[in-house]
Amino acid sequence: MENEKGSFGVPILTKESLATLDDGMWLDDIVMDIQLRSVHDELGPHKRRKSLIYPVHFYTKLKASGFTDVISWTKHEDIFRKDYLLIVENVLGIHWRLIIVCFPGNEEVEYIKKGGKMFQRKRPCILMLDSQSVQVSDSMEVFQNIRSYLTAMRNNTQKKPRIFSADSMPALKVQVPQQQGNSSECGIFVLLYAKHFLNDPPKELIDELDCTSWFTLTDAFSTRAKIRDTMRSSLEEQGQEADKNKSEERESEEEQNIAERGQQESIDKEREMEGRKEENTPEGGEDRTAQGRNYAVLGRLSVPGTKRKYTVTQDELKRRIMAENMSNNMLRSLIRVRKEDLPEELREQRPKKAKSKISIFSALSEGEATDLAEEMGAMLGRHVNVDTSASIPTAEAEVAKVSMVVAPSKVRPCVSYFQPMIFEVQAKSWEIFKPLEELLSS
Image 1 (cartoon, helix red, strand yellow):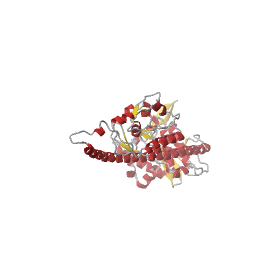
Image 2 (tube, helix red, strand yellow; image 1 turned 180 degrees about the vertical axis):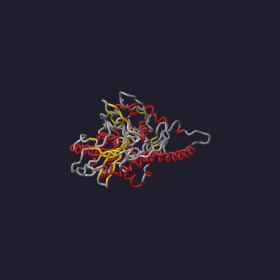
Image 3 (tube, one colour; image 1 turned 135 degrees about the vertical axis):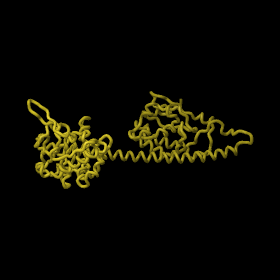
Image 4 (cartoon, one colour; image 1 turned 30 degrees about the horizontal axis):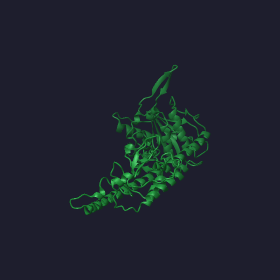
């Protein structure tokens, strides 16, 4: 229903709207909008381009406020290049019916000759499809409002003005399947009218066009049930996606806060270390307690190749693992490798809707993930009391180098931890991390 440039807004399904699909209920405007959009989207490319379905509030707005309030609704579309314009009318808030404007850009009826007879082709007209039998004469106001709208649109958007009258744009009644006493199925009937008409338009547009064979009342009942099941699943997915987005937003905010705290701690630390260096350095001498490269102390994880730092607690690490999501930067700060050194399968393994995230624990069961979280958290917890003012010389850090095998059949990066400590994990059949005990004992 919505054109590619976004003329119409996207309706949002709610639980209240979904409830109108229960048996015996009158479909509300949101369900009608979504389902009419679905009918249009399911058409082939050519039929989509040649047709336009207006939002269900269009005619109500046109009738109440006039042309000026709806001219912008189709500002990205040339309605006079369309074959069919579908407009839904809400009658007194209790009944839906369908109006179809055919070939509004044609000024005359086209004819073709078949078997020695002349047949009308691409006849400009207005069709009324109503599941409750009504006469065309009972809807003259509706037809006149549509003609006035077409005249105003033509004069405002086309170089050649034109007046749409009952002669140039006649109204025709179409014989369609009827509700047969059921008062709540009118919305379903309108959806089926639109689907059948757009998929197989009549070859000739004549008065009292017979389309009663399109579907049965039983078809209408089954269509309601099918739409209800589809939209219920859609609403559930919508809720899950919203929860996921909120979770990712919270995680992003947490990472930003951690990064900001880490940056401030880093600045304070550098100032403190600079002051101690001046105190420990003899006049004219060198600081021999911090020769070579110093490694960041536990509690702040630095990310190779960046200036970012993370302050990590046992609880935070456990939450990240249990959520099966870990940022690329957090992963690299833990295993101390640059992004380009990560195995390809880890670089490309990213959850949906979170291109900056990398899932490295998805192969673990909940129990294994919990165990891993506890082991990693315990390792961090045992060293929380390390004097954060201490500097670890390169010589000591070299002793702490550990080889970690990530996906044995792939790349095996050698990683260096930022201070002399060891991951102590029990041997388990994890698909991503090979146990380190055998590596450390070799």
